[in-house]
Length: 228
Image (cartoon, rainbow, N blue to C red; front, side, top):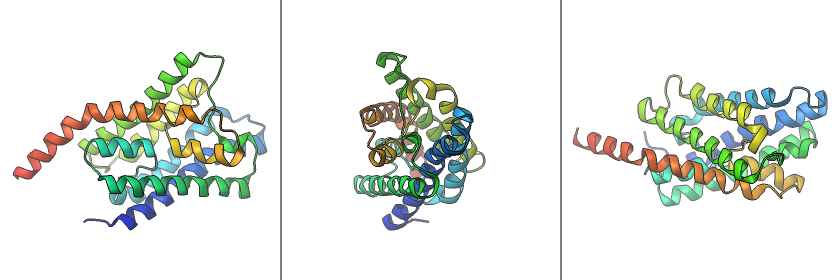
């Protein structure tokens, strides 16, 4: 079944909203109610749950991007058109901002609304490549499950799982955003934007690397399918 750009826009907006509420809301909730005691593990589980919801609810409609860097990856591999990139980007950014507004209104305003921040105890020469690596691993897992399973079976667990693991093991270095929209919304609403450049460069580098690595596989797959 073919879905319209409006349907794709709608589910991407809703999915990104859910992701940002869970991903940033968990950080703000921890700061508001637990003084940050739940820490990174709690912040890693929340987006895992959000992506389970998003992938299994909306994956068949939009491929469940919820992330501008992932959208660029899908464009490089030929899954979406140029005009669809515009729909995806608009939906993801609007959904993310609405998510941060929800967090601000319902949960609170601590922890810079959950804005990502790198650990400057480390050099940017390490921080930037770590964020690239986290984003490349996310895109690689997404492409693997799309190539092999088509977002069925355990695909949601795999995609949510890699996000959770990236946060669990890499957030203490780079902040592990992997998602420019998720980074933009809380930074914009909290006014803490000095680190935003990192999350609007490194994730795209990572997903582009993964996309070029998988592009040949998807091209060959489409050629096989066209001959059937």
